Image (cartoon, rainbow, N blue to C red; front, side):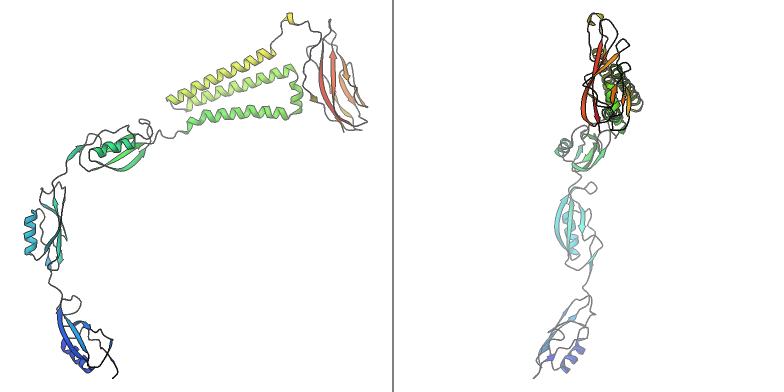
Length: 410
């Protein structure tokens, strides 16, 4: 015969379930009862085989009827009772004592129940387990040590050594304690706290950022750039190099640089004195600036005195003196185009002067021996060539000077 499917009799009464199963050609087997909080009392809560299973005609189907929800008991409050008293009260309520632990507690006397799980007043099934925590009394009290100024590892070691725990760490700017040192604790040093308490540390992160401390560095850097910029400009300037061969110009240049450096450093010191805080570091920077100013003025003054100082009369019997051996470049000329008139000058000689040049200038360019002027219109090209120009004065004995200049005609 063909199999039949077990009909679903869930929720039906026992009589209704037997009638439906019999109609399907099946036989009701064992009938049991169990508590169930979702199926009304007397209704079928389970069946075996389950609904929809294919079985042979005449097969047995076991049923489980709902006995309704299980009886509930309320967990009694045993807080403060001894462990023995709590055990008795819970047992009388149909409950079982589970795990019993011990912990310090400053509000419940030693030996009394301080916690219970489930809590008092909770509805549970009969025979449920209730865990207890029994008070071991208040924790031992310790005095928080003074760890101010210590490093963090040293402070943690000192606190843990007396039974305290280290909690959060906060950073705070201060100039009272070096960077990384302990500034304060919470609870503060000297306070009484239970053993195992958490202590918060405040660590110094150094002084509050003060950008004015960089003012001297920035200003000194700017002054250096100005001086270097002037020198670079001079190097790339042809007229500058030409004038540098003149002693008066060189003396004036160094005097100018001394003045710029002196005034600049003086201004830097004044600004630093006004804007910097009155601290040891600020005083050091001020003193360092004064030292730099003194050294710089002394060095530059020594250079001027040594190189450009006047020569004693006893050292003057020289018949010839060279003003400069620096090779200079005259303006570049072009064939067929008038050459710009150049007037040569020489200081320290007695006029009138006589000028000469060696070797001879290229065709079309002439030197006026009396006026020291170079002029004319070049007729032939000339590669860059050096010419020695010499000036002879009218003194007795005669004095002279010479310079080497370069000329190019294209």
